[in-house]
Length: 326
Image (cartoon, rainbow, N blue to C red):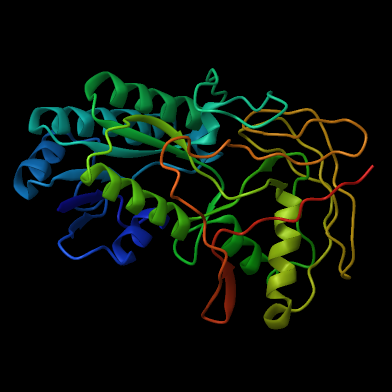
């Protein structure tokens, strides 16, 4: 089976190329500089030239804040690109797996988001991604849209690597405490896609939209705490944090300090804003998953192994601490 992977330079695309595929599988992988999906002719030409059995779209514009000032670029990458790819797949009778995001929701639901929950994106990033998802659905019946959240890996740009870089550059860090999500390893997403591909190859025709994210949920602050805790043997203690600065994709949001000394600290529960997912609030709150999990491809189970690369720990399938605090 031949797979065409677009967005091979990104976190998930990179891991898809590293995945130990079964015998008989081959991959043609392209980064944006070789196939810009916003250019329709190049997309059709790549599909016609490679003649894959299945296409995986891991390409996207993912700079959530910057999208507010670069809407044309975001829409070209996240809407026009998938529309072109889905049309090419339709003409070639090829199925498509397309990665999407939790940002298609507004974050106002007090609980886990299910696949059939109404979407309501609030920012340019979320709106452009949802439009791309709709374009895929409208052009191609044989598709799987896989929504995920808070992707991190040892490759590319992500929150984990940003925190580990900034902790060595700044005496204090700003980390918000009212945005709740499920950190998800790109390694696990690639493994999930690998499982889906093999099931489709075996005749499982459960096309449609699915959710896949790391188990549990946590605030960015809680995630940062866990990152620094894991990195402490290499990096030392984490710094503190001053007041937050405005975030272009959302309103200015409260923060909680990451103290310089290790210890336990309360999380703050605040009503949701754009792109935010929160727990139900009833006395001592328990964080709930952003996503309910895959509903058909049941064999997918996130890994839990600790992976150390270049002296910096990354956790595949990291499950953030679930904290009950008044």
